[in-house]
Image 1: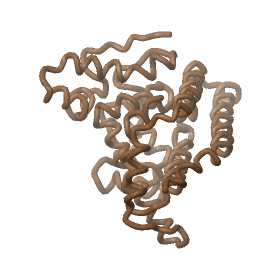
Image 2 (image 1 turned 90 degrees about the vertical axis):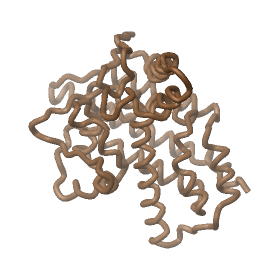
Image 3 (image 1 turned 45 degrees about the vertical axis):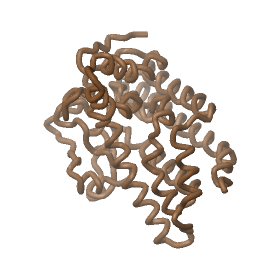
Image 4 (image 1 turned 90 degrees about the horizontal axis):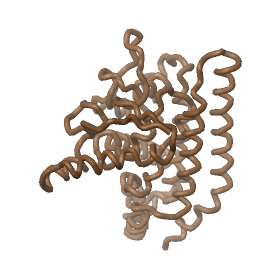
Length: 298
């Protein structure tokens, strides 16, 4: 009954090709930035992002996933089978995935347990295509995939769910380009580089917003949309910059902070608030936990 899950290795060559193309595009952007536009480019940050991507692949190869057994249970107890032979079914899967991705991404910013991994993605102080490769190593270990279990339980094929989520993430690669301007009417419906630049901002005006994947409509519906403003230049990175190019320290930085906060918390209620509440302990405050310095260098 778990046969659809066993087919994942067949897609590994395609995944490797896609990763290679993404890496090539990120490298070309850096070369153009340096040698054609004669603008500064942080090659050490580029190397850190590539190292993060390779480290994530190694961790994934261990096969450890908090969500995998829950996906298997949901598939065995699914309500039915939803075929993807119609435009309506494919469109329904796309929209449902976008909906659940929005809530996953929002939780990744507003829940300390998930932010410990996701903060790695927001650590670059220069937004580039290479920054899209920096996603942290512990996502599967924290259960981020649980947000998409309802899709399998409803009856969508597991590999289709995985495929549409992979397409979502691939779409977001180009959103990390700072040289693409606003795109007119498309800005109303789709997530664009302009919207994603705001998402990566550490300015108080830009914190915790624009969580969409391909679409921006759920941000507009749920009040988390913020538009890029010409009068407020975006400052990238974390509120308190993490000054390290060491991928190991970077991958563990959020967890070190979370552990510090748990040790300081008094009682189980306070510890639960650290794990499940917003980073920093109060809404829209600094996204790094208080009283923790980040002066870590390679």
